[in-house]
Image (cartoon, rainbow, N blue to C red; front, side):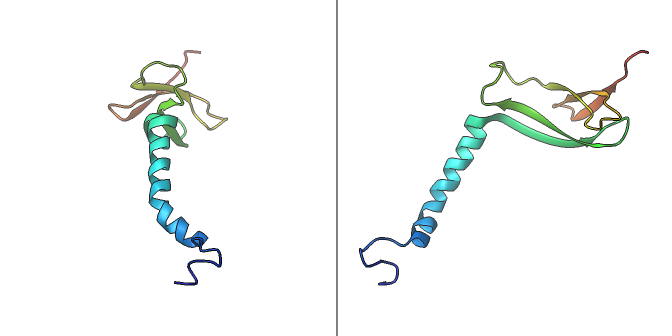
Length: 102
């Protein structure tokens, strides 16, 4: 017990980390899911045109926009050579390509 308590009778840093870690995890979870990202949902799909993997985020970041989370997201393919417009639907989990008439 003398090793856990230093010469000034303070708690060792390792013991305070072990005792405090559940509170740190809880606070981090609450900040991430209820303050920073509201209704977060990230899905991974591929571009229907070129097959490049896409990560699509449905949700709100730090109350930006101030409007409710939309069920569809308009984005572009991350492949610079493709660059096609994509529409992702959160409810049906489908990604559709929008081809412009040339």
